[in-house]
Image (cartoon, rainbow over all chains, first blue to last red; front, side, top):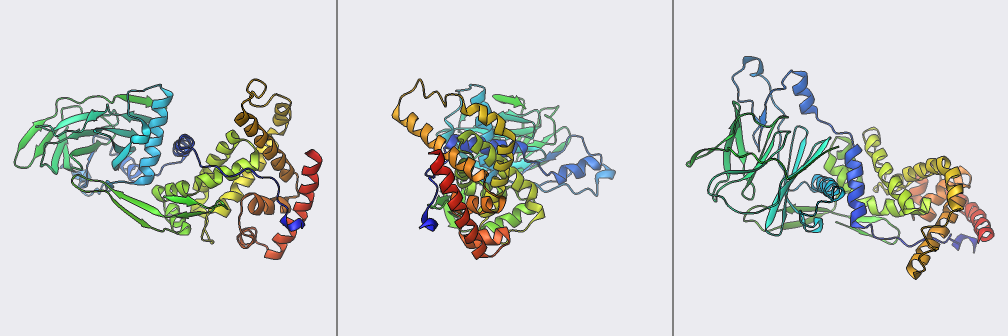
Length: 232
Length: 212
C-alpha cells in the first residue's frame, strides 16, 4: 500500500516555444565557444583581412611567410539544425527585447542554410517570400533587413556586418562566384540564389568584386549595414 | 523531433532537413542514441549538444518545476543544468542509453543548492500574496497558484529528506526514472533504491499530510 503512494505531482506541460527559445539563447550566450582555427591564426600573427568562403578556404596571397599556412576549412551546412535553432532564438530574443516588429513572425522563420566562419555564425532564413540573415558572434547579433527573395540581374549585397560577413543575391543560373576584396578572394558557393562570404573580422575597406564565370566582374559598391545590430 | 512519453523520457530522432534551390524538402528520421550525441558533443560538436538540448529540454524543465515548485526557477535550473552538462561533457562518458537520468541528477543538485541559498528569501516570499491571486479570481489562475503551492510543499518536503532518500525520490518519483537506471546512476543495487523509496514515501506522506 505504501509502495503505491506517490506525492501529488503536477502534470507535465509542453515546453512553450518562447521558453525554449529563451533557454536556447541563455545557453548559447554562456556556452564557451571553441575556435581552434581562429586561435591558430591569431597565434601565427595572421590578423589581417582574411577571406574565407564557401566551401573553399585558401590563403590567396603570395606572402612567403604564409605560404605554408593551412587555414581552417569552413564548410557550410545546408541546415545545421542546432546552430540554426540557437542563432534564430538569439536573434529573435534580441529583436523582441528591442521592440522591433518589422521582422516576420519567428514562428514562420525557416532556416535555408547555415554558415560558420571565425567568430560569426550565419543562418539564412526564409519567411514566406522574404529572406534575411541572422548573424551571431559571441558578443553581438546582426540581422539583415528582410527583402523579397528575388533574382537580381547583377550580384547584389544585402548585408555587410562589421565582422566582415557579406551576404547577397546572384542572378539566375549562377551557382558559384569568386568574391574578392582588399587583395584576397575565394570561390563562393551559391545556395538558393544566396551567397555568403566572411572576411576575418572586418568589413572590406575597398568594394568587393564578384567574378562570375562567363559573365564578367561586378563591383559591389553597395554594402548595406544590417537592419538590426546589437552588441551585448 | 522528439515525442515525450508520460514518464518524461523521450524517444528522439534526428531531423535532417535539406532545403536548397530547386530541391524539395527532404525529411528523414534516423534515431541517434544519446550516448552517441554525448560522445560527439565531448569532441566539441555543438550541434550534437544542441540535439541533446532539444531532446531533453522539456523533460528537464518539467522536472525542475517539480523540484522547485516555481516555473521561473525551473527555467533557471534548466539552463544551469545544460550549461553544467556542456562543461562536463568532455570529462565523462555516458554509460546508459539516455542522458536524462544524469541530467535529472544534475538538476537535483542545482535545485538543492538553490534551495539552500534561497531558503530565507522563500520564507519571506511565502508570507506575501502569491502571484496576485488577491486581485485575480479567474479559476485558471487560482488553480495554477494552487498547483504551484502544492508542488512547493512537495519540493520542500523532498528537500528535507536525508540525502540518500532525496536522490532516489528526485529521480524515481519526481522524474519517473526506472529503478534500474537510478541504481546505475547512484551506484547502488536496485533493492537499495527500492528501500530508500519506501522509507521516503513514508516520511513524505507524513510530512505532506501534516501540511495539507
